[in-house]
Image 1: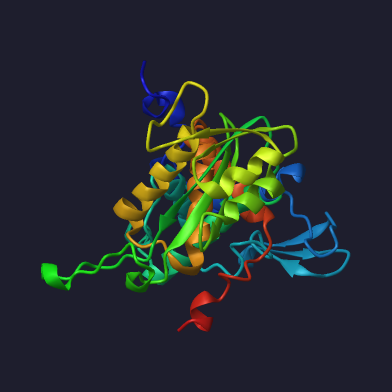
Image 2: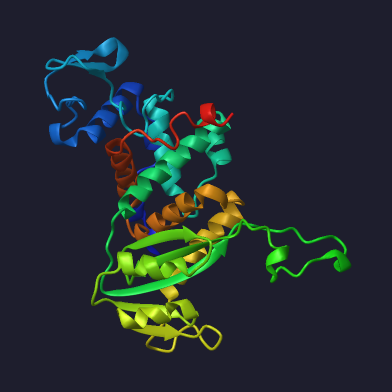
Length: 318
């Protein structure tokens, strides 16, 4: 059977189709994505008024009721944008088409823009993806596991100078744990902390009572037995015993690890949670056509408020 992602039905949008648009068509597409309830007719973000003047020469609107001026991207993740609307649409298509993520360097080359612009834009799209996980509750059969990312220590050249990285004093101190909680054939949420033990509180906060939880043999998962019907698998013996397994969680880590090693090369630090949320979104929506993935990210970005983390990022971090 042909894999879904290789079938023509999975390809419902292409970069070619975006760049065939004129800038006016791309602008109208943005308006339709921003205000679907009014079929692209502007709605004032300040007072909610639907009667507006159209300042065509500047692609701006002026509210009849409160006289507030705004644009199709005002107050969204794309606020204060300088890119053409066509390039913004193309950026979203390029971003969702990367099965293992897309690096800011490659995005900057494809869009012919500065690396800094591509870096911030990519993180804004990750922020839009992460919005879907906020406050999510999982139920049914749930798998949880943790894995460590970042904090790489380069081995010394001479064998006698190499350090045993199993000891704390020889580690970089930057390595962090990503814990994933994932429904069987459903949604997932991720958490980032210093160690995998943070997953215990995360499970209790995100998994509804009465659910079935599968975990590995790590001792911090022992407390799950008091709150959920819990099954454990010892990975030193096997990966599945016919009843318990965490293969869905491991599938997530496989994608995130390929993103780290093959695409981004460095995803640690304060933004590891953003890359983890991106990998979670890609896993959850992997059966969706790329056109629907594009719509999901674009609508989420335009429905989100202006980013406090990434708005003016390079001005604050020269």
